Every structure is written in C-alpha cells, then in structure tokens.
Image (tube, rainbow over all chains, first blue to last red; front, side, top):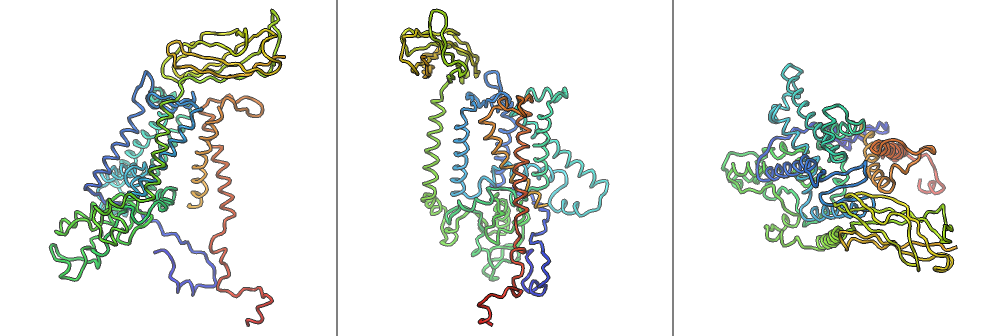
Length: 473
Length: 93
C-alpha cells in the first residue's frame, strides 16, 4: 500500500531521501451494523458502563461501596477493606486478570478487544452519537468533504458538545472512585472542588474524548500493548474472525439468486460492506490482520448480504485455522478447545483463583505491629523495676467497631502500664505506647522473648499473639 | 507526531506502574523534601509523584529515541561500493 515499488527505489538511488513508510492515515467512517454480534457488543457496552457509571453511587454500611480512598490509603470493595499491607491481593488480582485474558485469547481470540475493552466500548458509544447527529456513513463522508457551512458548523458543535458532556461525566465518575463521589458531586456545584480533583477529572475526560472521538482505531493499532502481543496466545485452534476464501473466491458481482457455480464464481458478491462496517477499516478477506480487533461487525454485515442473496450464512464467521483447512464444523472446533495451552492456562488460573479466594476468606481482621522504642533500651523505674517501651500499631481491618483487650506475657511477674482496653472504629488504626515492666531478677540478661496479646472482647477468634524482645540490662 | 507518542505513551504506562508500586510501599506523609516533611495533601503528593515519574520515564524514552537509528541510517551505503578496501579484496577483483 504505502511501500514504494522496488523499481522506483532502484531508480532513485543513490539519493537517500528517507521516505515515510507509514500509511497516510485515512479517517474510518464505520457503517452502522445490526445482528447477533452487534447485539452482544451493545449488551456488553451497557453492562460495563452500568457498572462503571453506577457502582460508585452504591452505598454500603454508610459509605461508598467501591472506593479507592487514596487520601486515607484504604481501598473499599463492598465488605472488604484493603490496606497498603494487602497489596499482595491486588497483585494476585492483576495476575488473575492477565491469565483470564490469556485463556480467553487462546480459546476465543480477541474477545476482550472486540467486546469489553473500554477503547472499543467508548468508541462504540461515541460513534453512535456521531451517527445520530451527523447521519450514516455516506452522510458523514459527504459532510467531512463539504466546505464549512452553517449546517456543518451546527452539526459539528452538536456532536462535539455531546461527546464533551459524556467525556466530562466519564472523568467525573473516574474521580468519584478515588474521592467519595457524593462529596465530589456536592463540591462540583459549589465550585469548591480541589485543584487536583478538577485536574484529574479533565485529564481523564479529555483523554476519553480524544481516544474515543478522534483516535479510535489508532489507539488499538499503535498504542495498545496487548494488541501487539496477543498474537503469541494464538494457535491454529484459536477462534478468529475468518473469511472462508475457498467458498468466497473468486468474488464478483451478480444478480440476486444466481447460483455462484453457474457463473464460475465464489459466494462473495464483492459488495464491500464488510470493509465499510469495519471500525479499523481493514478488509477481512485479505486474511487475519493484526488490526482486526475481533468485533465481528463484518460477520453480521456479511450474513445479512448472504441472506438477501439466498446463500447460506457464515461466509465470514468465527472459525479456526485448522477448521477452515479441514472443513470442520462446530463440533470439531469445540472438541479442539481442550489442548495443552488451554489446560496450562486453566490450571494456573484455577490455582491462583483458589489461593485468592482462600486468602480473602482467611484475611486477618485484626493486625498488630509491635515496634520497640529504640531511643530507650531499658531503664530502671520506681520500685526497682526494669522497663522497656514499645509502640503498638493496632489496625482494625474489619467492617465493625471493636473493643480489644491488650495484655503482655512471657516473663515471670511481667506487667504493663498503658491502655489495657482499646476501642477502634471500623477500618481504623491507632498507635499507642506501652511500658512493660518486670523485676530485675526476671528472665535472663540480654534479650528475652515476650508476647503481646490483643483480643477482641466481642469475638474470641479475633486475636493476635505478637512476639517482641525485652531487654534486661 | 508519532515520535511524540513514542516518548509520551510508554512513559505514561510505566509511570502508572511506578506510581502504584512506590506509593503502595511509601506513605506520602513519610516523605521528606529538602529535609522538611511534605505538607501537601495526599492527593497532591500522588499527583505530583505521578508527573515526576512520567517526566523521568519520558526522559528515558527521549534518550532511547535520540539513540535509535532508523533502518535507513543503518543501511546507508547498501548498494554503493564500500569505500573500505580490505586486505583480501584485491584477490576478489
């Protein structure tokens, strides 16, 4: 396409004028499409956006159900509270997401890209708005080519405003996951939003606008890391959107109802609709290309044409390399899902998922850190007792307020000065000082092991037995 | 235009990861700036931190871009006789 023919290069030597090998970007005007996969795509658009725009408004125990509270350094996800110490769960969650993606990709190809990726979803919504305002594909191409007029200006303003509003709402929602959304909402109307909240709202909104409104398939083609490496998860049994070359070629126009064999043609009527509906502007008939995001718009479009022509559907369909070569049906394709790659991905995924669920289920609801006061090693206090000073950092990780009893053990006649009953609200932490005292004859000289016990008064099982070192001079 | 993206986009991604890792381990209130505790709000510290990471990562990408040779630069002279005459070249001629 954009590469220079060899002969031309020969002639132009030896003047080494570097020519750009990039294809000149042409705006893609995807034609609207309906059908079973379009319905699936819209269902996922609705589902993901219902979750995204809606979940931040859900209340839970008097707070926001899902809130990544950066200021307090606590992540709330429904009944769970994650502290920075729980970063392992977040990492495991990311690993689970990655392996799910690998598994889905190995089996179904770019399902993520085609149906669930925010880039696809927002492009879908933004294109829909564009189509509602500026009209169908042909009208949009005409409008783009037309000189500026009052009508064009009006349509453009309307489109950009609608995009802008949606992008703004997306940015607002984004900030609402990090600062309680009701606070953000209230301060939005009283113009008292913090500078950084305002900044991130517009930052996220602007990029939504640019990515979904203007850059669209460019993001998938040039910016997305997953698009670059998804190919390694593919094998000849991976489902991809495939044009059945054997059935379709040689392509050519013909009247409705003409038997392709009678005119020595394949089933493809070369209407070009599969190219027109493609959001990345490729021709799937040229074979699998990395630009193909697997949205299946061409399947829906081609099926409609096949129906009109009274030909069987599925000239473009979900199929695998093996299936196309060996003329397999769905039964054989499904039969080849279980293969070493899929088994390995599934096993790893299942193992990590079990570990994750087990980890969450047995997650401690009380944490105690004991820190020896390093400024004071050991000192003699009234009555000849030896005292060591500790700082106890108690974290109530649970969703309910608790009263805890604090005690110390491990040496004969050991006792402590400081709070013995500690009250902590839900998901709160406190650091306090404890002086531990023992008689001089208790324990050996040097370091002795002692234990702090923090027990919930309302639930016997919520208890921590934490060791510490007591220095005897 | 592409080159700007080559610098800004990868650095943005990596800065996001760096930001996450750094602030998971370090509480903004534990930070010191020129010997003084940081008095900014946490959101401000996170934000400035992110842009700091982005800036540093972008510098790295910028240097990569600067040092990178295009195919044309590497292959310059292909098809043209090499000016260097080695000891064995006389026999070949």
